[in-house]
Image 1 (spheres, rainbow, N blue to C red):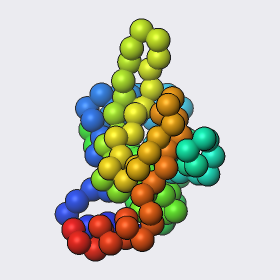
Image 2 (tube, helix red, strand yellow):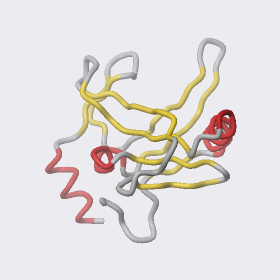
Image 3 (cartoon, helix red, strand yellow):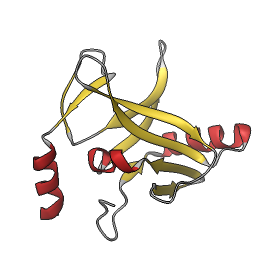
Length: 126
């Protein structure tokens, strides 16, 4: 939908690909569907859920046995994002390194995106 020919919508680090592939094998899921929704103190939050099927309008990214589907309404906001998986003594989880984020709350769970018109103009210039 918002793709640039020859460029994946998102990139997945090796660590994240291994974790996604593990999650897919666990219950035979087709992959993980990522998106965004309104919420949190900065205005938007990432969503991530198991996907039993691939929707025709999903943007599909496959890498090293991992499959991520990007929900149609989130494609513009997630284009150029790197998905990573980090583990520390206190927590582990997926991290989104997203160039489209203008601001984030202190805990990093909630984000604010650049103006939609500015995002569209950036896409046209690439």
